[in-house]
Amino acid sequence: MLRTHTCGELRPEHIGQTVTLCGWVQRTRDKGGILWVDLRDRYGLTQLALEEGVETAEVREQARQLGREFVLSVTGQVAERHSKNDKMPTGGIEIRVESIEVLNPAKLPPFLIEDDTDGGDDLRMKYRYLDLRRAPVRQNLMLRHRVAQATRRYLDGQEFIEVETPVLIKSTPEGARDFVVPSRMNPGEFYALPQSPQTFKQLLMVSGFDRYFQIVKCFRDEDLRADRQPEFTQIDCEMSFVEQEDILNTFEGLVQYLFREVKNLEIGELPRMTYADAMRYYGNDKPDTRFEMRFVELNEVAKGHGFPVFEAAGLVVGICATGAASYTRKQLDELTEYVKRPQIGATGLVYARVETDGSVKSSVDKFYSQEALQQWKTAFNAQPGDLLLILAGEPNKTRKALSELRLEMGQRLGLRDKDTFSALWVVDFPLLEYIEEEGRYFAMHHPFTSPKPEDVALLDNPETIGEVRANAYDMVINGVEVGGGSIRIHDRAVQARMFSLLGFSDEEAKAQFGFLLDAFEYGAPPHGGIAFGFDRLCSLFGGADSIRDFIAFPKNNSGRDVMIDSPSQISGAQLKELSIKTDVVAGK
Image (cartoon, rainbow, N blue to C red):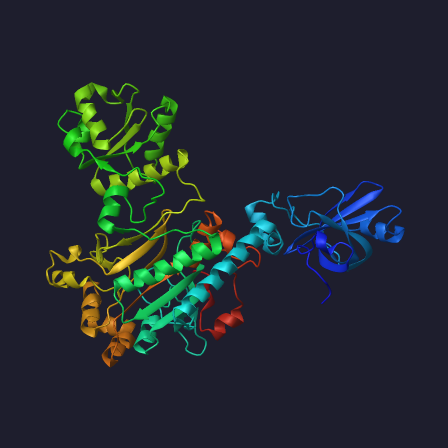
């Protein structure tokens, strides 16, 4: 090894030892009579000291020639630091330098490689290898490593076997768009990159590997945002001879273990919430339960008083923002404009303050007596100082808009603390959802999800198909869906029936999934599983909104890797080998 210690290792107990460190120059500070150099590696920072009359003139002059990010090997004696820095682990010592070897000089980097850098997102993405030298980014990847190792320890202790599944697979029509890969040896035919290893892990259950997991890369060609990348990582798991309760208990244990090992937190038992209740009380299927502010329906007390907006609405519903009655008219106008944004979709906002004397003052006072407004107060169980915020309109659209308003108010009132964690299971999802534009049903999760046993008979009646509940479950933490899964169909006839409901002909089902249907005829056990969004889980633990911060080399919002300039065009010779015409690539 070129070094005896790392730059984050030395402490006062090492004083007097001669050591050799290797690393990058963080910065230099020249005060004339004394020169300091901060040397950095992934373990930390160590201060080098070169003083006139102590270190040789040759070594001090060599140090003055050092630039930022020069790569050095430095030998010297560990000494007590005169001006100690209790904010860094090595702040009690410094190295009195005896020799410096420049292993590689460096150009001046395009941005400061410090915690608080002056580089913008685009610049840091272009020079990601430099950005990865910064402590916050490095710590994110170290956290990712700890989560991965803890996951493997827990699942290994539960008798799970890690099995790799193929990356070049068959394209399927359900779900997001596939990334496709042309086959040179099979002209005109294409592989797809997997959106998940779903069918392979089910086949592993048929094979008798009753507990499987994989920390696996998946691919989806979809529009990007902070919590999406074209390639992402899942903790993918499957179990045989289980029911839903077995899955929930096993993987509740995993998440409890990860919080304990990675965050040193006990999150306790996870509550259960039905999909129906999540939609009714929070307006979405991944509620943020760090704060209450549940929906209150007001049709009975708000209608019948002549206010046209409420009279024409299918649903009048609101939330109570505790202690927010002091909001100014300007703040309330801002909230009104917020809910009227196209992505929110509400037509307006009605508000009411509960005054200190218990009376209620609303924005629609001319339609409502104080006695009627007191009914609002009672419905919300509101107290003096509370603010009532009410929306009205078509039920589904209104719930969605109020859900966004609830999250916005939670943010404004400081109720969405990144260091507070609230986890739950959402269960009893609908099995199917009808898409009017397509004129058919789609699987709420995926086509291999089994219906609740008690709801199977409802599949035979066209009028009750939409009422069938899935044997499915999602884990939600702080309003983020971090994992989802289901008990799978393991019977060929039931799976064929499901494909039929989803609009597949027998020929299409056989062409796409014949291998799975055939496998079910050779003794498929009851099985189920779950997949966790590994990148999302890491960003949650790290208190970040974007999963990009926890991926070593992420894509930007256009799906590009600006560092290596990908995707890019390929040569005509390559296209010819793949039997792809150049005019097709050019879009002609």
